[in-house]
Image 1 (tube, rainbow, N blue to C red):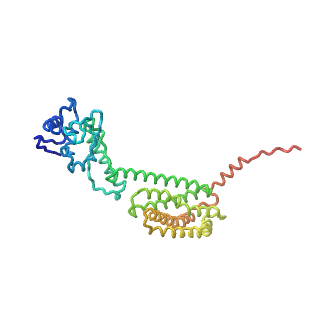
Image 2 (cartoon, rainbow, N blue to C red):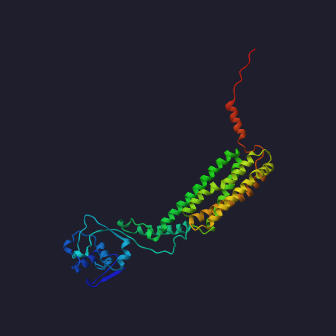
Image 3 (cartoon, rainbow, N blue to C red):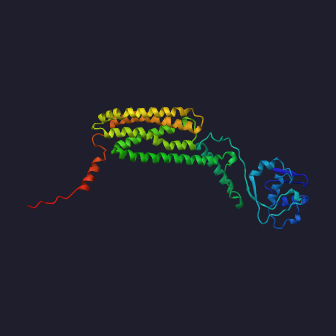
Length: 348
């Protein structure tokens, strides 16, 4: 970047040299009052930069002022003074440069790329920044990269998306762990509770797969909805698991038939009513309601298919028989140990 000032017959270019700027100021005494400049003055770069930004400290600065003023900042301290000859310029000189930004335009379009695409690009830029900053003087080694709010904050949004993804994963994992405990306690059977949890996990995976199929990127709405998936998916499986548990039959086939006969109709009816309610949300104009309707419709649909299809099939093929996997025997043993009483001998 170069700027030639005819009045000084000196070509100033960046980086600015102290001697060049000092000579430039002396050649432009109509602008700079050199009698105010101390011998230890070191803010020559700021002087040249201010001259270029304001088009020679004109009352109507050039287009570069409005284009670059957001990317250059100065800090006023005790050494700040007015070295301009004409007070009407209303500009302070002798300030310290606080920051200077270099703007780089990319082809990334905000809202169309996810963390998996943006993360490698951001990491490459970070490595480039660190390598370049390491070559700079000590006073300039505080450089960093960012995306301002005006540029939609691509790097910031990338970090937000990563945190949302982590939160969604944590919510799903915690939900599945809680569901496993509740199902085992409810059915009093480790095998039934585990198989029901596996079914819920498969339902959750299918719902998560809807996000890329629908062309969505993980955002606040998607993260919120994913946190609700496990709670919605557990509803129908838990009824079937309880029906298998309370069956009076001892063999798996008998228990499965009784489970489907007693609970299957209620599960199917509940699923259809919820599907019908969420169906009308698919045509909503508000994004939240439309996405929530799609999530609910897919979750209930997958839950109905997996619970009546997969879970019932697993129970009929490998479901526990008699008291296999049941917590009842150890519970009875503990109860007997706790309530055991010593019988006093009878003396005739």
